[in-house]
Amino acid sequence: MIFLKFSPIIVMVAALLSGIDVKVAACYATIYGIIIAMLVEKREFKEVTNIVYEGVATIIEVFFILMFSYAMAEVFMATGVGASIIRISLRLGLTSKSVALVGFLVTCVLSVATGTSWGTFAACAPIFLWANHIVGGSVALTMASIVGGSCFGDNIGLISDTTIVSSGIQNVDIVDRIRHQGIWSILCLILAAILIYFTAVGMQFPDKAISAEEAIEQIPEEAWVTLEAERPSAVALLNQVKEGVPGYMAIPLVVVLGFAFKGIPTIICLLLGILSAFILGLGAKTIDFMTLSDLLFTGFSDAGNHSVSMMLWAVAFGTVMNMMNAFEPLSRFILRISRSVRQLMFYNGLLCIFGNIALADEMAQIVTIGPIIKDMTDENVEASEEDMYKLRLRNATLSDAMGVYSAQFVPWHCYVVYFITIASSIYPLHQFTFGDVIKYNYMCIIAVVSILILTLTGADKLVPLFSIPNEPQVKLKRKEDTPISE
Image (cartoon, rainbow, N blue to C red; front, side, top):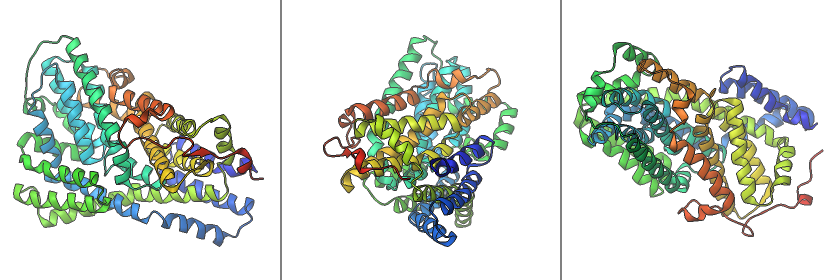
Protein backbone atom coordinates (compact mmCIF):
# COMPACT_ATOMS: atom_id res chain seq x y z
CA MET A 1 0.00 0.00 0.00
CA ILE A 2 2.82 2.40 0.88
CA PHE A 3 4.54 1.67 -2.44
CA LEU A 4 1.32 2.27 -4.38
CA LYS A 5 0.81 5.64 -2.71
CA PHE A 6 4.37 6.71 -3.47
CA SER A 7 4.43 5.28 -7.01
CA PRO A 8 3.18 8.51 -8.69
CA ILE A 9 6.49 10.10 -7.63
CA ILE A 10 8.31 7.26 -9.39
CA VAL A 11 6.22 7.90 -12.51
CA MET A 12 7.06 11.62 -12.34
CA VAL A 13 10.81 11.05 -11.90
CA ALA A 14 10.94 8.36 -14.59
CA ALA A 15 9.19 10.66 -17.06
CA LEU A 16 11.54 13.55 -16.27
CA LEU A 17 14.66 11.40 -16.53
CA SER A 18 13.49 10.10 -19.91
CA GLY A 19 13.49 13.67 -21.22
CA ILE A 20 9.76 14.40 -21.06
CA ASP A 21 8.91 18.04 -20.33
CA VAL A 22 8.01 18.75 -16.71
CA LYS A 23 4.47 19.86 -17.63
CA VAL A 24 3.72 16.60 -19.43
CA ALA A 25 5.49 14.55 -16.75
CA ALA A 26 3.33 16.17 -14.07
CA CYS A 27 0.24 15.48 -16.19
CA TYR A 28 1.11 11.78 -16.50
CA ALA A 29 1.89 11.52 -12.79
CA THR A 30 -1.36 13.29 -11.83
CA ILE A 31 -3.55 11.07 -13.98
CA TYR A 32 -1.79 7.98 -12.66
CA GLY A 33 -2.09 9.37 -9.12
CA ILE A 34 -5.85 9.86 -9.52
CA ILE A 35 -6.21 6.20 -10.50
CA ILE A 36 -4.15 5.09 -7.50
CA ALA A 37 -6.13 7.39 -5.18
CA MET A 38 -9.38 5.85 -6.38
CA LEU A 39 -8.00 2.38 -5.60
CA VAL A 40 -6.35 2.93 -2.22
CA GLU A 41 -8.79 5.53 -0.87
CA LYS A 42 -11.83 3.77 -2.36
CA ARG A 43 -13.24 7.01 -3.78
CA GLU A 44 -15.23 7.74 -6.91
CA PHE A 45 -13.60 9.49 -9.85
CA LYS A 46 -15.78 12.58 -9.45
CA GLU A 47 -14.95 12.85 -5.75
CA VAL A 48 -11.21 12.67 -6.41
CA THR A 49 -11.29 15.18 -9.27
CA ASN A 50 -13.42 17.60 -7.24
CA ILE A 51 -10.73 17.58 -4.55
CA VAL A 52 -8.12 18.26 -7.23
CA TYR A 53 -10.16 21.17 -8.62
CA GLU A 54 -10.49 22.63 -5.13
CA GLY A 55 -6.72 22.38 -4.68
CA VAL A 56 -6.01 24.14 -7.96
CA ALA A 57 -8.58 26.84 -7.15
CA THR A 58 -6.52 27.91 -4.12
CA ILE A 59 -3.72 29.25 -6.35
CA ILE A 60 -5.68 31.11 -9.04
CA GLU A 61 -3.97 34.33 -7.94
CA VAL A 62 -0.58 32.79 -8.75
CA PHE A 63 -1.67 32.24 -12.36
CA PHE A 64 -2.41 35.96 -12.76
CA ILE A 65 0.92 36.82 -11.11
CA LEU A 66 2.74 34.55 -13.56
CA MET A 67 1.04 36.14 -16.56
CA PHE A 68 1.77 39.70 -15.45
CA SER A 69 5.34 38.70 -14.51
CA TYR A 70 6.05 37.42 -17.99
CA ALA A 71 4.39 40.50 -19.46
CA MET A 72 6.47 42.86 -17.33
CA ALA A 73 9.65 41.06 -18.35
CA GLU A 74 8.74 41.56 -22.02
CA VAL A 75 7.96 45.25 -21.45
CA PHE A 76 11.17 45.81 -19.46
CA MET A 77 13.30 44.25 -22.21
CA ALA A 78 11.56 46.09 -25.06
CA THR A 79 11.43 49.56 -23.50
CA GLY A 80 15.10 49.58 -22.55
CA VAL A 81 14.92 48.98 -18.80
CA GLY A 82 17.43 46.14 -19.06
CA ALA A 83 19.72 48.06 -21.41
CA SER A 84 19.71 51.15 -19.19
CA ILE A 85 20.72 49.04 -16.19
CA ILE A 86 23.68 47.63 -18.13
CA ARG A 87 24.78 51.03 -19.44
CA ILE A 88 24.57 52.69 -16.02
CA SER A 89 26.55 49.86 -14.44
CA LEU A 90 29.22 49.87 -17.15
CA ARG A 91 30.03 53.50 -16.42
CA LEU A 92 32.15 52.04 -13.63
CA GLY A 93 34.62 51.10 -16.36
CA LEU A 94 36.00 47.71 -17.34
CA THR A 95 39.55 46.69 -16.47
CA SER A 96 41.18 43.31 -15.89
CA LYS A 97 40.59 43.76 -12.16
CA SER A 98 36.99 44.97 -12.41
CA VAL A 99 35.46 43.12 -15.37
CA ALA A 100 34.38 40.08 -13.32
CA LEU A 101 33.02 42.23 -10.48
CA VAL A 102 31.12 44.58 -12.79
CA GLY A 103 29.79 41.58 -14.70
CA PHE A 104 28.60 40.05 -11.46
CA LEU A 105 26.83 43.21 -10.30
CA VAL A 106 25.24 43.88 -13.69
CA THR A 107 23.89 40.33 -13.98
CA CYS A 108 22.56 40.50 -10.41
CA VAL A 109 20.53 43.62 -11.16
CA LEU A 110 19.47 42.56 -14.66
CA SER A 111 18.31 39.13 -13.49
CA VAL A 112 16.12 40.80 -10.87
CA ALA A 113 14.68 43.11 -13.54
CA THR A 114 13.99 40.36 -16.08
CA GLY A 115 13.38 37.39 -13.79
CA THR A 116 15.46 35.05 -15.92
CA SER A 117 18.96 33.70 -15.35
CA TRP A 118 19.21 32.22 -18.84
CA GLY A 119 18.12 35.42 -20.57
CA THR A 120 20.45 37.50 -18.40
CA PHE A 121 23.41 35.24 -19.13
CA ALA A 122 22.72 35.23 -22.86
CA ALA A 123 22.58 39.03 -22.88
CA CYS A 124 25.61 39.67 -20.68
CA ALA A 125 28.03 36.86 -21.51
CA PRO A 126 28.97 38.34 -24.93
CA ILE A 127 29.77 41.70 -23.36
CA PHE A 128 31.81 40.50 -20.43
CA LEU A 129 33.58 37.50 -21.95
CA TRP A 130 34.84 39.60 -24.85
CA ALA A 131 35.59 42.56 -22.57
CA ASN A 132 37.58 40.16 -20.41
CA HIS A 133 39.45 39.02 -23.52
CA ILE A 134 40.38 42.59 -24.44
CA VAL A 135 41.59 43.63 -20.99
CA GLY A 136 43.35 40.31 -20.30
CA GLY A 137 41.38 39.15 -17.27
CA SER A 138 40.53 35.66 -16.01
CA VAL A 139 38.01 33.80 -18.17
CA ALA A 140 37.14 31.40 -15.35
CA LEU A 141 36.55 34.19 -12.82
CA THR A 142 34.43 36.25 -15.23
CA MET A 143 32.43 33.23 -16.38
CA ALA A 144 31.65 32.05 -12.84
CA SER A 145 30.82 35.60 -11.72
CA ILE A 146 28.22 36.24 -14.43
CA VAL A 147 26.73 32.78 -13.87
CA GLY A 148 26.35 33.52 -10.15
CA GLY A 149 24.93 36.97 -10.82
CA SER A 150 22.45 35.58 -13.34
CA CYS A 151 21.22 33.12 -10.71
CA PHE A 152 20.73 35.89 -8.12
CA GLY A 153 17.56 37.34 -9.65
CA ASP A 154 16.24 33.90 -10.52
CA ASN A 155 16.13 33.21 -6.79
CA ILE A 156 14.76 36.51 -5.51
CA GLY A 157 13.27 38.30 -8.51
CA LEU A 158 9.64 39.30 -8.15
CA ILE A 159 8.97 38.08 -11.69
CA SER A 160 11.15 34.96 -11.65
CA ASP A 161 9.15 31.83 -12.45
CA THR A 162 11.07 29.82 -9.84
CA THR A 163 10.27 32.45 -7.20
CA ILE A 164 6.60 32.46 -8.11
CA VAL A 165 6.16 28.70 -8.43
CA SER A 166 8.10 27.82 -5.26
CA SER A 167 6.12 30.43 -3.31
CA GLY A 168 2.83 29.21 -4.75
CA ILE A 169 3.52 25.59 -3.83
CA GLN A 170 4.29 26.61 -0.24
CA ASN A 171 1.23 28.90 -0.20
CA VAL A 172 3.11 32.08 0.74
CA ASP A 173 2.85 35.58 -0.70
CA ILE A 174 5.69 36.43 -3.07
CA VAL A 175 6.33 39.85 -1.55
CA ASP A 176 6.49 38.28 1.93
CA ARG A 177 8.95 35.75 0.57
CA ILE A 178 11.20 38.44 -0.94
CA ARG A 179 11.17 40.43 2.30
CA HIS A 180 11.98 37.26 4.25
CA GLN A 181 15.10 36.45 2.27
CA GLY A 182 15.99 39.90 0.94
CA ILE A 183 18.66 40.92 3.45
CA TRP A 184 20.20 37.43 3.45
CA SER A 185 20.41 37.53 -0.35
CA ILE A 186 22.00 40.98 -0.34
CA LEU A 187 24.56 39.89 2.28
CA CYS A 188 25.45 36.90 0.11
CA LEU A 189 25.82 39.28 -2.83
CA ILE A 190 28.10 41.64 -0.90
CA LEU A 191 30.34 38.84 0.37
CA ALA A 192 30.55 37.31 -3.11
CA ALA A 193 31.42 40.70 -4.62
CA ILE A 194 34.23 41.20 -2.09
CA LEU A 195 35.68 37.77 -2.85
CA ILE A 196 35.45 38.34 -6.61
CA TYR A 197 37.27 41.67 -6.32
CA PHE A 198 40.11 40.39 -4.15
CA THR A 199 40.48 37.27 -6.28
CA ALA A 200 40.92 39.48 -9.35
CA VAL A 201 43.37 41.76 -7.55
CA GLY A 202 45.34 38.73 -6.38
CA MET A 203 45.77 37.56 -9.97
CA GLN A 204 47.81 40.73 -10.66
CA PHE A 205 46.60 41.44 -14.18
CA PRO A 206 47.73 44.61 -16.01
CA ASP A 207 45.29 47.53 -16.02
CA LYS A 208 43.54 48.29 -19.30
CA ALA A 209 40.15 49.99 -19.57
CA ILE A 210 37.52 49.62 -22.31
CA SER A 211 33.87 50.58 -22.85
CA ALA A 212 30.84 48.37 -23.36
CA GLU A 213 30.62 49.52 -26.98
CA GLU A 214 34.16 48.26 -27.62
CA ALA A 215 33.30 44.90 -26.10
CA ILE A 216 30.15 44.56 -28.21
CA GLU A 217 32.09 45.48 -31.36
CA GLN A 218 34.41 42.53 -30.67
CA ILE A 219 31.57 39.98 -30.72
CA PRO A 220 32.03 37.87 -33.90
CA GLU A 221 29.22 37.36 -36.41
CA GLU A 222 28.81 33.66 -35.57
CA ALA A 223 28.14 34.61 -31.95
CA TRP A 224 25.32 36.92 -33.05
CA VAL A 225 23.83 34.09 -35.11
CA THR A 226 23.91 31.77 -32.09
CA LEU A 227 22.25 34.35 -29.86
CA GLU A 228 19.58 35.08 -32.45
CA ALA A 229 18.70 31.39 -32.52
CA GLU A 230 18.88 30.78 -28.76
CA ARG A 231 17.74 34.11 -27.26
CA PRO A 232 16.46 36.73 -29.75
CA SER A 233 15.64 39.08 -26.87
CA ALA A 234 19.33 39.09 -25.90
CA VAL A 235 20.25 40.41 -29.36
CA ALA A 236 17.69 43.20 -29.04
CA LEU A 237 19.03 44.11 -25.61
CA LEU A 238 22.65 44.17 -26.83
CA ASN A 239 21.66 46.47 -29.68
CA GLN A 240 19.95 48.80 -27.19
CA VAL A 241 23.11 48.83 -25.06
CA LYS A 242 25.18 49.66 -28.13
CA GLU A 243 22.86 52.36 -29.48
CA GLY A 244 21.98 53.81 -26.07
CA VAL A 245 18.79 54.39 -24.09
CA PRO A 246 17.99 57.14 -21.57
CA GLY A 247 19.22 56.48 -18.04
CA TYR A 248 15.76 57.16 -16.63
CA MET A 249 14.56 53.88 -18.14
CA ALA A 250 16.00 52.17 -15.04
CA ILE A 251 13.34 53.87 -12.90
CA PRO A 252 10.64 51.16 -13.41
CA LEU A 253 12.85 48.59 -11.68
CA VAL A 254 13.28 50.95 -8.71
CA VAL A 255 9.50 51.46 -8.63
CA VAL A 256 8.79 47.72 -8.54
CA LEU A 257 11.40 46.91 -5.91
CA GLY A 258 10.47 49.90 -3.76
CA PHE A 259 6.79 49.02 -3.60
CA ALA A 260 7.57 45.33 -3.11
CA PHE A 261 9.71 46.00 -0.04
CA LYS A 262 6.94 48.23 1.32
CA GLY A 263 4.66 45.19 1.29
CA ILE A 264 2.42 46.27 -1.60
CA PRO A 265 0.59 43.27 -3.16
CA THR A 266 2.51 41.55 -5.94
CA ILE A 267 -0.08 42.18 -8.66
CA ILE A 268 -0.04 45.93 -7.96
CA CYS A 269 3.78 45.99 -8.05
CA LEU A 270 3.77 44.27 -11.43
CA LEU A 271 1.12 46.60 -12.86
CA LEU A 272 3.05 49.64 -11.62
CA GLY A 273 6.18 48.26 -13.27
CA ILE A 274 4.41 47.82 -16.60
CA LEU A 275 2.74 51.24 -16.39
CA SER A 276 5.93 53.13 -15.43
CA ALA A 277 7.96 51.37 -18.17
CA PHE A 278 5.25 52.23 -20.72
CA ILE A 279 5.04 55.91 -19.71
CA LEU A 280 8.82 56.39 -19.63
CA GLY A 281 9.19 54.31 -22.79
CA LEU A 282 6.86 56.72 -24.61
CA GLY A 283 9.27 59.51 -23.74
CA ALA A 284 12.25 57.42 -24.84
CA LYS A 285 10.39 56.43 -28.04
CA THR A 286 11.00 52.73 -27.39
CA ILE A 287 7.32 51.76 -27.23
CA ASP A 288 3.81 52.74 -28.30
CA PHE A 289 0.36 51.47 -27.33
CA MET A 290 0.14 48.81 -30.04
CA THR A 291 3.61 47.54 -29.14
CA LEU A 292 2.55 47.38 -25.50
CA SER A 293 -0.47 45.31 -26.49
CA ASP A 294 1.74 42.94 -28.47
CA LEU A 295 4.16 42.59 -25.56
CA LEU A 296 1.32 41.83 -23.14
CA PHE A 297 0.02 39.22 -25.56
CA THR A 298 3.47 37.63 -25.83
CA GLY A 299 3.92 37.62 -22.07
CA PHE A 300 0.51 36.12 -21.37
CA SER A 301 1.03 33.50 -24.09
CA ASP A 302 4.49 32.50 -22.85
CA ALA A 303 3.23 32.24 -19.28
CA GLY A 304 0.33 30.06 -20.37
CA ASN A 305 2.52 27.85 -22.51
CA HIS A 306 5.01 27.26 -19.74
CA SER A 307 4.64 28.31 -16.12
CA VAL A 308 0.86 28.50 -15.72
CA SER A 309 0.24 25.06 -17.19
CA MET A 310 3.19 23.64 -15.25
CA MET A 311 1.95 25.17 -11.99
CA LEU A 312 -1.56 23.85 -12.61
CA TRP A 313 -0.35 20.28 -13.02
CA ALA A 314 2.13 20.58 -10.16
CA VAL A 315 -0.58 21.66 -7.72
CA ALA A 316 -2.97 19.01 -9.03
CA PHE A 317 -0.26 16.40 -8.47
CA GLY A 318 0.48 17.65 -4.96
CA THR A 319 -3.23 17.63 -4.10
CA VAL A 320 -3.59 14.00 -5.18
CA MET A 321 -0.52 12.95 -3.20
CA ASN A 322 -1.70 14.76 -0.07
CA MET A 323 -5.13 13.17 -0.40
CA MET A 324 -3.48 9.76 -0.04
CA ASN A 325 -1.00 10.87 2.66
CA ALA A 326 1.59 9.51 0.24
CA PHE A 327 4.53 11.30 1.82
CA GLU A 328 3.84 10.01 5.32
CA PRO A 329 6.50 7.24 5.33
CA LEU A 330 9.19 9.68 4.17
CA SER A 331 7.86 12.23 6.62
CA ARG A 332 8.13 9.76 9.49
CA PHE A 333 11.69 8.84 8.53
CA ILE A 334 12.79 12.49 8.47
CA LEU A 335 10.94 13.06 11.73
CA ARG A 336 12.69 10.08 13.30
CA ILE A 337 16.16 11.46 12.59
CA SER A 338 15.20 15.06 13.42
CA ARG A 339 15.63 16.29 16.98
CA SER A 340 14.24 19.76 16.40
CA VAL A 341 12.25 21.81 13.93
CA ARG A 342 15.47 23.36 12.69
CA GLN A 343 16.89 19.94 11.89
CA LEU A 344 13.70 19.13 10.01
CA MET A 345 14.06 22.31 7.94
CA PHE A 346 17.73 21.50 7.35
CA TYR A 347 16.80 18.07 6.01
CA ASN A 348 14.20 19.74 3.81
CA GLY A 349 17.04 21.72 2.24
CA LEU A 350 19.13 18.59 1.72
CA LEU A 351 16.16 16.85 0.14
CA CYS A 352 15.87 19.71 -2.35
CA ILE A 353 19.55 19.32 -3.25
CA PHE A 354 19.20 15.57 -3.76
CA GLY A 355 16.13 16.19 -5.93
CA ASN A 356 18.07 18.69 -8.01
CA ILE A 357 20.92 16.23 -8.49
CA ALA A 358 18.56 13.44 -9.53
CA LEU A 359 16.29 15.46 -11.81
CA ALA A 360 18.92 17.86 -13.24
CA ASP A 361 16.24 20.54 -13.59
CA GLU A 362 15.48 23.23 -11.01
CA MET A 363 11.79 23.52 -11.85
CA ALA A 364 11.34 19.75 -11.81
CA GLN A 365 12.88 19.73 -8.35
CA ILE A 366 10.63 22.54 -7.15
CA VAL A 367 7.40 20.93 -8.33
CA THR A 368 8.43 17.43 -7.21
CA ILE A 369 10.13 18.05 -3.87
CA GLY A 370 8.19 21.22 -2.96
CA PRO A 371 4.94 19.42 -2.04
CA ILE A 372 6.92 16.84 -0.05
CA ILE A 373 8.67 19.35 2.22
CA LYS A 374 5.46 21.35 2.60
CA ASP A 375 3.56 18.26 3.70
CA MET A 376 6.33 17.14 6.06
CA THR A 377 6.40 20.53 7.76
CA ASP A 378 2.63 21.01 7.94
CA GLU A 379 2.02 17.52 9.32
CA ASN A 380 4.90 17.25 11.78
CA VAL A 381 5.25 20.68 13.37
CA GLU A 382 3.09 22.20 16.09
CA ALA A 383 3.05 25.96 15.65
CA SER A 384 0.82 28.99 15.54
CA GLU A 385 -0.38 30.07 12.11
CA GLU A 386 2.09 32.96 12.16
CA ASP A 387 5.04 30.72 13.00
CA MET A 388 3.97 28.08 10.50
CA TYR A 389 3.86 30.77 7.83
CA LYS A 390 7.49 31.64 8.61
CA LEU A 391 8.43 27.99 8.17
CA ARG A 392 6.65 27.94 4.83
CA LEU A 393 8.61 31.04 3.81
CA ARG A 394 11.82 29.18 4.62
CA ASN A 395 10.67 26.11 2.70
CA ALA A 396 9.92 28.29 -0.34
CA THR A 397 13.35 29.91 -0.06
CA LEU A 398 15.08 26.54 0.33
CA SER A 399 13.20 25.02 -2.59
CA ASP A 400 14.10 27.91 -4.88
CA ALA A 401 17.65 28.52 -3.65
CA MET A 402 18.62 24.87 -3.82
CA GLY A 403 17.01 24.61 -7.24
CA VAL A 404 18.84 27.59 -8.73
CA TYR A 405 22.11 27.84 -6.79
CA SER A 406 22.92 24.17 -6.15
CA ALA A 407 22.36 23.49 -9.86
CA GLN A 408 25.83 24.92 -10.46
CA PHE A 409 27.34 22.04 -8.44
CA VAL A 410 25.87 19.40 -10.77
CA PRO A 411 27.84 18.89 -14.03
CA TRP A 412 24.87 17.31 -15.85
CA HIS A 413 22.30 19.88 -14.70
CA CYS A 414 20.42 21.74 -17.45
CA TYR A 415 21.69 25.08 -16.05
CA VAL A 416 25.35 24.08 -16.38
CA VAL A 417 24.83 22.60 -19.83
CA TYR A 418 23.09 25.78 -21.00
CA PHE A 419 25.71 28.15 -19.60
CA ILE A 420 28.59 26.18 -21.11
CA THR A 421 26.82 25.85 -24.47
CA ILE A 422 26.10 29.59 -24.76
CA ALA A 423 29.57 30.60 -23.54
CA SER A 424 31.31 28.21 -25.95
CA SER A 425 29.26 29.55 -28.87
CA ILE A 426 29.82 33.24 -28.26
CA TYR A 427 33.45 32.97 -27.08
CA PRO A 428 35.06 30.07 -28.99
CA LEU A 429 38.59 31.04 -27.93
CA HIS A 430 38.21 29.13 -24.66
CA GLN A 431 37.24 25.50 -24.02
CA PHE A 432 34.63 25.92 -21.28
CA THR A 433 34.22 23.15 -18.71
CA PHE A 434 32.24 22.52 -15.53
CA GLY A 435 35.15 23.97 -13.55
CA ASP A 436 34.66 27.34 -15.21
CA VAL A 437 31.09 27.44 -13.90
CA ILE A 438 31.78 26.55 -10.27
CA LYS A 439 35.46 27.23 -9.39
CA TYR A 440 34.98 30.93 -8.63
CA ASN A 441 31.19 30.92 -8.33
CA TYR A 442 31.22 32.56 -4.92
CA MET A 443 27.57 33.60 -5.08
CA CYS A 444 26.22 30.08 -5.46
CA ILE A 445 28.65 28.55 -2.97
CA ILE A 446 27.93 31.17 -0.31
CA ALA A 447 24.16 30.99 -0.80
CA VAL A 448 23.89 27.19 -0.53
CA VAL A 449 26.28 26.79 2.39
CA SER A 450 25.03 29.79 4.36
CA ILE A 451 21.31 29.03 4.21
CA LEU A 452 21.89 25.46 5.39
CA ILE A 453 24.15 26.54 8.25
CA LEU A 454 21.91 29.44 9.29
CA THR A 455 18.85 27.18 9.24
CA LEU A 456 20.49 24.40 11.26
CA THR A 457 22.30 26.49 13.87
CA GLY A 458 19.79 29.26 14.49
CA ALA A 459 22.30 31.89 13.44
CA ASP A 460 19.65 33.21 11.05
CA LYS A 461 18.48 35.36 13.98
CA LEU A 462 21.49 37.57 13.19
CA VAL A 463 20.01 38.35 9.76
CA PRO A 464 17.06 40.78 9.94
CA LEU A 465 13.70 39.29 8.85
CA PHE A 466 15.34 35.93 8.06
CA SER A 467 14.93 34.03 11.32
CA ILE A 468 12.52 31.14 11.81
CA PRO A 469 10.96 30.28 15.20
CA ASN A 470 12.74 28.01 17.68
CA GLU A 471 11.58 25.51 20.31
CA PRO A 472 9.51 25.77 22.45
CA GLN A 473 7.72 28.34 20.27
CA VAL A 474 7.44 25.56 17.70
CA LYS A 475 7.99 21.85 18.24
CA LEU A 476 7.92 18.53 16.48
CA LYS A 477 4.82 16.45 17.06
CA ARG A 478 5.21 13.40 19.26
CA LYS A 479 5.35 10.07 17.45
CA GLU A 480 2.16 8.89 19.06
CA ASP A 481 0.43 11.96 17.62
CA THR A 482 1.31 11.03 14.04
CA PRO A 483 0.54 7.36 13.45
CA ILE A 484 1.36 5.83 10.11
CA SER A 485 -1.72 5.27 7.99
CA GLU A 486 -2.36 1.70 6.94
